[in-house]
Image (cartoon, rainbow, N blue to C red; front, top):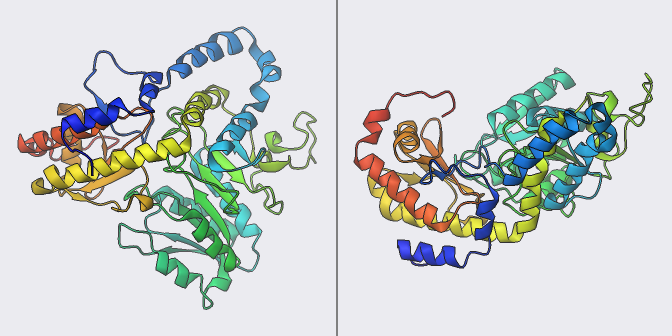
Length: 425
């Protein structure tokens, strides 16, 4: 590990090739000391999005009105989808912006189950996002009373690699229709081997559905090379698309048997023909349903453009360096105060956030937000998540966040915020 002093952090920031991207985002001049480490939940606002929002509201909607549908609006979900495709190793037409993440996940899961008749099980793990599990159960219920979701148990930190291998083995794999996992776990930050896991699902005759919400934009991903069938992901975390921005859906171009279970005019081959019997559109566009939310959809593009400009390999290299430094400083300064690292220590198995455990996690998180100007989040029962978005987080931020965490605990912050229950922890 490099020099763990503030001087060492300053030296790293001085040679950081991505340092200039920090100024591409809005920062509150009235709160210059804020350290924002929650980009794994909601990314910062790109400066370019401010001007774009003004243009969409005043000119495109205010002046051009319905004419804007013929001046770019109609193709927005596909065009931005193709930009995201460049990030995830997909081809043109394989990615579209669509609905909320849970909705596109449901569409993908039901489509997969219909494409595997006679197979009745969906495999996932207990590190998956709770909403994903709820959606998968709804998809299984829609497929029939004989379908079920099997949740594989982990150690709470690493994904159940051996358990998945056993479940896909000769004894039970013949009943598995779908394997659905979060590429990076929202809690521990565990990162699955995407290609190896997809290959294991295929060898058992199952389809593979990935949730890329906590990996897109910070973890190199090549869906095409891995022959992934389906993938979804939100755009408001590391892609900085804005609160509630629409999710994306990837459908492998070779999987023409996968069909949208929620058909609608926008996903048809003749949307303006207004016919009752229109067929599905080509590519992933067939999974579109209704009119897209243009105001939020167009604002996804500036954040995606910044990620593409920075380059995913450079982003990953900086992400690893930031999280490695954070883990080392936690061991040095926070472990004596009752903190433990609850993320994989091998950076190859970790996304861009690090979770710490503490028996008063929520109180610590609230003290950080309200007293120390460090925004993190907590997850029950004992996790505090620190997210490191490489585009706007520097090495000095890492050092200062650890220093302030130690300070707020030693000054009694835990007692001052114990029992406080915010709407969003």
